[in-house]
Amino acid sequence: MKKFATLTIGQAPRPDLAPVFNAIAPAGTEVVHAGCLDGLTKAEVDKQFAPVESEGLLTSRMLDGTAVVLGKSAVRKALQEKIHQLEKAGCSPIVLLCTGEFEGLTTEKVRLIEPDRLLPPVFAALLNPLQVGVMVPLIEQAQSELNKWKGLDKPPVFAAASPYTASKEELQEAARKLAHQGAEVIVLDCMGYSKTLRDICAEAVDVPVIASSTMIAELTANLL
Image (tube, rainbow, N blue to C red; front, side):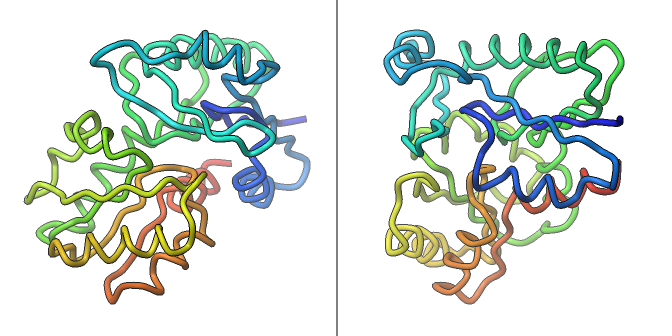
């Protein structure tokens, strides 16, 4: 049986994302859902994935929905280990469910779909010369992830609202903040922003709102 994999930096299966990727799987194709934090307790995650000073921060969720903040270096190491495991298990492609930048992730033969490599140039081609607003889960990511938006004609404006902990009101307030900063289109820069959350944000503003998760699912569907 053919199979492909999704790989989250949190725990799998993701209730917000697994159904999306299950739905695009052709008949006779198995979807394997894996996560960097699979099998770990919250205490173990806090110890093994604690951010170190000055490194980029990432956020994801445990199976019970608890949000966790993770250090990028530990996540990258865990991702590479999981990628090798999934490749040995015969999964292709492997879809990374995170929009963060991870330099140097590799496979031996199979296709690795990395949102941070795919989406910024796609958005630049589609959206230039518009002023882009980027919503991120953590405001610290406005600086740590800034480099990937260098293809935009104008530096993006940022606002933060976590897809894992923010209320409807907080999400909409972040969307309005971006619009007030001049955003002509809003990009939700985390795979945790589902179509439902995209719709919530879109209700609050009069500019297009794009969910990265939807874009990656649509691109993946054409490769299966």
